[in-house]
Image (cartoon, rainbow, N blue to C red; front, side):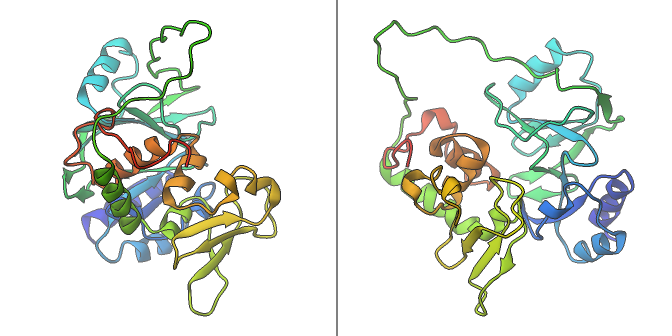
Length: 302
């Protein structure tokens, strides 16, 4: 039995669903396992070949992970929340920290407003040891029990911003960089993360054409969706919904690529979606921080 399979079965025994990943991208459709545990034989089949290990958050387990992208934010959190810092913790290659909790209150995966912190919960998964990427290995940093909490009240709050004077126009975040670099990064994201792989994290696509290009699925944006209304074109790397009420929320009713889909799903703009996906896919090595990079070629609300 390989180490990853062994760890997967340990998490499975704790009512947490493990899934195999290629890098950070799920190899299997996993949305159907958010609220139920897969059979052990299926888990053994998933990990019969080398793969990274990810854990589905939220659902029946109530797993919530605080994802600290940088050590400065994590160290500040430890000082301000001493009652929570002894929970199970993983060191990430970024470098950063993942702090695990079991939360009784339902929590959704969110991009937290505090710089360097995201919350992995319902609708998401987290990469776990002994996984590795080009940047390094995920390792257990604090091998203690996962703390049980009633609600997620241990996240830092962002300091309030000064209000603009009345009559002042809305300002957009300013970045430093160039349009050519932004388009190159966007192309890399689309090449490394096909739309079918991203959509499969949140719903289960069903082939709808013999050539394997087209798929349909329950729409991840509105439930219930008993008659699949969501479509995926794996050839053009685009997706969308047939329902008019859902189409009105798409930019100019246009189909969505991986960036548009991620942005809508997480309630952020395209710029933040590009930043998050670049970091997830380890395409961020040459860019020190998204606040120092401009996506000049991309309209803010494309």
